[in-house]
Amino acid sequence: MTNDNDKFKAVNFKYWAYFIIIGVIGVALWQIVAGIYLLKWDVLNITLPWKYFVAECVRNRELPLWNPFINHGFPQMGHYETWNPITWLVGYYVGYSPYIIQLEYVVLIGFAGVGMYKLLRSLEFTNEASLITAVIYILSGYFIAQAQHLGFVASGTWITFVVRYYYLLSKDGTVLTSLKISICLFLLLTGGYPGLLVVTGYLLGLSFVGHIIWISVKKGKAIIPWRWVWLNLFLVVALCLVSGVVLYCSLELSEYVTRGQKLALADTGWGFFTGSLTFRSLVSFLTPY
Image (cartoon, rainbow, N blue to C red; front, side, top):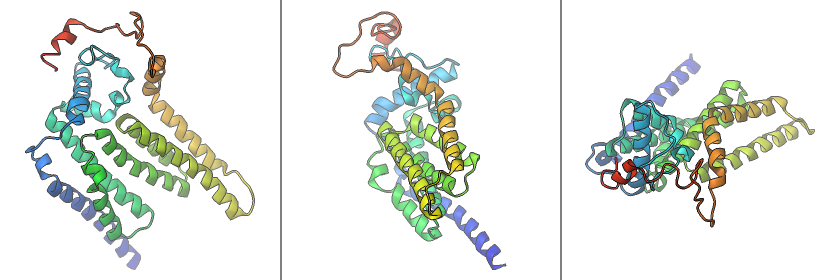
């Protein structure tokens, strides 16, 4: 009976923790939530125009392959954030505006708090310690000072879920957990900052090798835990499948992504002049959207 009561209290506290996290965000960012102030700089100058264009394409049942309204036209499909499912869902059902994009910022912070709370609970921290750390995490300078960089905020959100599920993968070892990791990595790929995705990949690689070493030490001899290997292989394959469109677009444009070289003046394929300087592009100088 005592164990049942403890479980009930733990589940009850979990929902109270979510409510407290939402409440803290509402109080700390009430001016953003109420629309009294807008976020500044990159989120309005760069991220919003991209998301607005993608949203308009989705709502008109068109693929966002080429954007004629920015930089005299550029291949929008080559930008990883173009394929972020959150952008597509919000764009299709709601549409983007300065207020909507800052609500997305607030929601991401909420998920970050929940992700950190669940991560620490999985690591067997107490309910109180997990909640306090989650609140400190979402109110840290990383999230508050980086409000203009939505990619950094998204990275800080999804990394908590990736780490948690990878830890659970080392414990329970199920295909479903591998699939959850691949989905979270896809959200990190299409919504986060690339540098943090690379760092996450390094950490997962080290954890993969470290788990094999730990099992070998525990068994007293060098062994290969094949179930662990197959689960990680499934994770990689699933990630490649869900990220197929991003990988294809990146490969398609890879030869044109250069540093310190002249811009290609070709008028075929994805050359510099292809699709550029259309009438709508020129008009966009006066009416950006």
